[in-house]
Length: 345
Length: 280
Image (cartoon, rainbow over all chains, first blue to last red; front, top):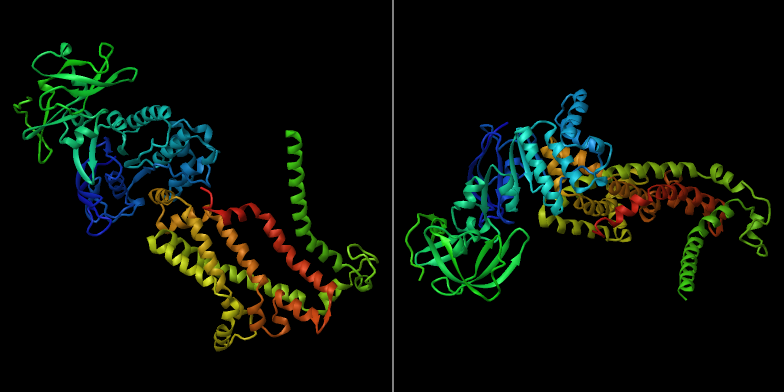
């Protein structure tokens, strides 16, 4: 096991253009499950590929286990990687796929069978060893890719959107399986995704990236409850945090905190709220509309409720946000600032 | 109504296949029957040319193998073919791989440029090339052909293999490199085995081109013992206006059988090799 560290890591693909990754500093913890989260084009995959050694950094350092690895080729970094497409070797059987890293790293031949069987049983694919990759389902392919990654007991796991090719139902179970797998092997893992649900559910910590810049590194609770800036605030959560520009600050509040006034206790900010759309999502309702007056007047605001049966389209109701749930951001830097008193009228 | 339409469809289907089969099999039938016909049978105009009218004979085969250097020509062609295939693979495989992978947008342009050289006709090139051959002192030597043939087999093979290598996902090589191979190792142990169809196509294609090439073989080779199949047969079995039809057909049959056999053996892979990337 090892800690991965990057120091002002930068990757510029085309000279003169903005870097795909800009001066990223991060340090994983021992055995941690760290998620790189960001929209497409945010540089998360480039960052991961630099750590893997598949992409050469323009500047900055990468350390694995305390050693600078910039000059090492991928095979010398003691890493294993699972790719979005799984990248199973199509001409080799499952057994040979899993044994491939052992063979390539010149592990003694008599150990192969035992190690392959260990990895295969860990992932429950012992029965598939004679098949070819094309004869496997998506979920099975993913497990083979994981078995191939784990078989030589790497210091670090790098996973590049490994669930994005699975259908929704399979994705949930595969996610759970991955979590269990990580708990069992305890290897430091870096996981790249654009899916905030995956990031929140699996990550010990989440690194939120956009346009090659780190916006926040924190636990799922930290990034959700205390977003460092408006990007993090709106990227996480579905629907995203409601933002309102009030004089020199941006005030934000989560849809789940914007509720009918009767269900809000303590000090709160109240609005007259005109309901314009109601979506029933089974376990919850998403209500959207516009506050009828004040500085938020006319701006679209979301509310997430357990029940919206008392509300009707076009009606106007009294809603409120508890004072303590308001987040404040600087208007020019969009960074989080201390709460202050603002006028809503 | 619908039933009769289906029957009609079937009839047309069978008809089309029959026409093509007859069309393609006829040359072979003609070669076989002519090879074993007595001259009397061949030259009697009243005879039905499609069947044996007299007893079959082995005279033509005997003539071919004892009175001409046919075996030597076969050996020459095989030798040149194998060497040219080897040279083509050694040059085209790495070139195609690097053009497909490493040089970005310029890879494509260079690939097209290389393919364009393939389109320059041999009838235009044999005069300047004969100067080159003479300068190197390779007149009437099989090495002249070994030197010249790659000039058209290599560009075509590069172009063909580029399409193949492009169809292999880059992630596979990335995975192989993370798993413990060098870039070269990933190329040799991952890319090459996956592209066997493409490489096989190149082998068969190159070999076929070598066996049927005419202009260079005619220009650069003069002595009887150095002839290739494609020149030896017409030069030495057509004397003035005398055609040794029986021996000619026997020679063509023997020369075309191995290639027909090879094609059929790898037909699926051959088609895969030519259509790669066409359907995604």
